[in-house]
Image (cartoon, rainbow, N blue to C red; front, side):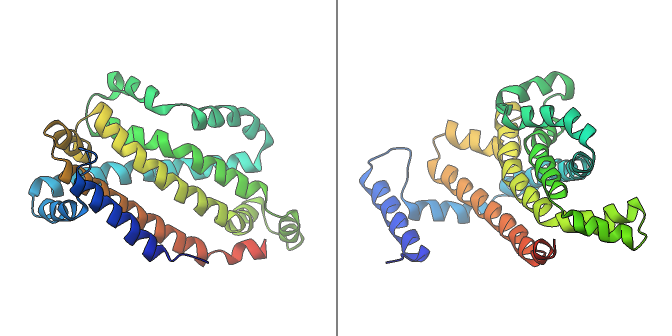
Length: 245
């Protein structure tokens, strides 16, 4: 018997409300109080200022990761020499505990938006490179041979055959990069520079305003799920490339 996600949400919401009402855990307020705190946050200018700053650093860092990661991934997929040269470093940074590495950026970039942008970039660029490389590497050789038969130049084969055929993996890499970028922007704002949402999280915790703390988490999750859902929609739109490939 399959359980509807709606009833699952109702169950966990009820459990949250019960735990908050019973006072089992001091750090968890009732869910109803958290929803009221969400409405209160929307009325505060400090929230909108933090949202603007967080969104700006997130989008700039993610945009740089996509702009840098896709070309490098395509290059690694096309060239064995580039793959051997770069894959070690890409896999190293992909598996490295970046949270411990990020504070080293402060002496170079200072405490501010630049450091947070660099943190978002470091968290997200590697998965874009890996998936872009995998997409190019798995393009059928018959498509490339077809292009050569029709007299296509190497440039046209890359941009009109290889890249479109690799789009499913590239979009998957962007979707995963969004998830890692969300982690990066919060880590950067909390650990390095207490600005944006990171500053609000620190304020709410230090003043033990747990309703607002959990309200901000719910808002952040909702925005992340919405953004990922939009990318998944694009991913499904171009899924026919995988069949063609």
